[in-house]
Image (cartoon, rainbow, N blue to C red):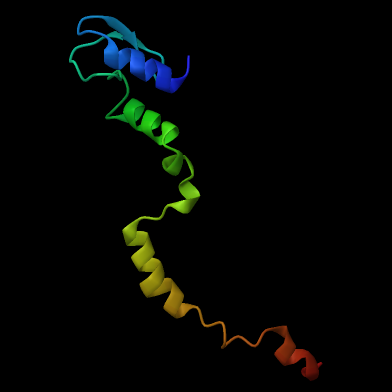
Length: 96
């Protein structure tokens, strides 16, 4: 069964019903009204897996960059890239 379908089933289930985690497939008893994921994995691994896979922008991680990484790139990496200083192979062709 697909992730989104299992999530919808879990959200509509009543407290005390047996449901299946949409991420890992573990069967468990729903404890709270809002619960849709198991708690067998450490922290929020199943919930994170679900949301990272059903949200298209999160699935394509190559287009996302954290603000801290963006700032570091802009302030440290870009200023140290001196493309004009490197004459490359063309500058040395007459010396052979």
